Length: 370
Image (cartoon, rainbow, N blue to C red):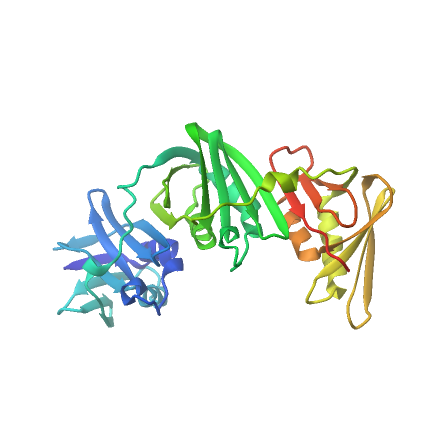
């Protein structure tokens, strides 16, 4: 068996899947990537049992490829990166348990395993709900919400992105209990029933990496236990989180009677300046809402202080509210409109942020006592 591949084609394929490959795995086979030949060509597959990624790969020449092979993934990736531009790699099976990689005068002999032990996820046997979505719309939903996912929270259902498919729309929501992000986008084709799912954090991040051609369409299939995302030249399968996502509509529907409208760029720059002297641990800043302006201030245990006043349209009485500045900046980073609307009630209630003239996206931030 021999495969001949250019360095560029190998790296292009491996970059799409290498995120789930680790050198040290509970199952040694998972540190390997799997080469498969199918009717449409070759593909390379990686898995960590939670997420499985595959990418098509262009092979320049093949000889006697009669069965699948596995190769240590990180080592193969590092070898390819270390070779000169335009290099050709010859991958050849030697004696049992050995793979040789040659390129010009460079030669590497790697220990490998039996490809039959590679655990491929089987989603074809599950009943799926299928729909198409524009790749740019799917990336937009992920980018506007994923930052609010929890990290290693004991409430495991928060460690992911909640999606809901209803007729012609896909809703995305993420929260870590301190902030919440919600947006939606159109899908192609009607979903006959409401479909809810929670994609784990790692699955969301790896799916996002697969979505490169934003002018293309992405095929999504959701079953009880998995989500399959098929984009141009790649596939991603992720297990779903088995849990119930909290009722986010109650959080968003909180009553407010005060409204500020402020320039996103000006607001974000002022927050960044003032936060330099905030407490490194709590990252707290104060927002004082006054007529036609917002006063931003912060201090730290060393008794240092910073403040900045920015113009804003504001309706309502004077109000001082504390927030984690990182949460506000994360939200402003994904808002693409010139202005942001900030809806408020009092110092103890959550603030709702919305892109101006945008009824699709919504963000909620809990207040911080300073």
